[in-house]
Length: 317
Image (cartoon, rainbow, N blue to C red; front, side, top):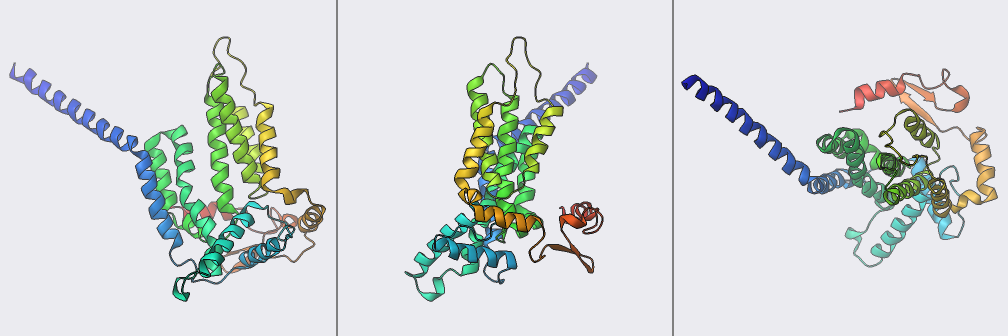
């Protein structure tokens, strides 16, 4: 009898510990928004500290020259990149100019800080789409871990501290992935929710394209969903084909956010740029060698094919 009581006590204790652990996890997940806000604040602090200490890189100088051209009404400068990054920098530089005109010298914002500030903000906020996308696949706790790795990751912090389009591209692309997978996972009987997610995904794709001309990610997303279904279609449920409004919204948002794409001067410049007729300035320093990063030398004449694998191995936390 005492043996039964002992066993029962052990089981009861284990059961209590299990319930307690699940309870703590539930509380942690319930306050995920609070955790994400804290990660955003810490990530912002890491990214904004000392952003004006280093001089401008070549691409950043080009962005600043494009902003000066925007002030004159010329939107064709730096045409190999879309307008969203430059438009945000334009707003930041103009705001910094207005601020500097009203404050003493010690409180003024430098060109370097104004140029990089939009990426600092969007880079810090990227913890939200990372959490959402990771939570879809692996749950909220894993989503929070992924968000924390982004907030503190050296590679992410470094990229977010310079005026490069990659920060905005990642931000909008993650939202595009997330809303698209939500649309695919929604029942065909709930057409309103499904349509809303497709529209939000299309808008995110449009902003992503207006941040950087990387259309292959769009194709990879569609290829993934072609082979991996998010849910089985129920009896009598309508087919889950991607609606035309998804593509229409993506195109409309892209053109609205990047109207310079329609200018003949932009296409002339892009033709010369993609044809490698301009000064080559793309490359990666790997070891003691500077490799060209151009299409004509790919895949075996330029950057080593194992470059990204090595980068992930030694740079990922």
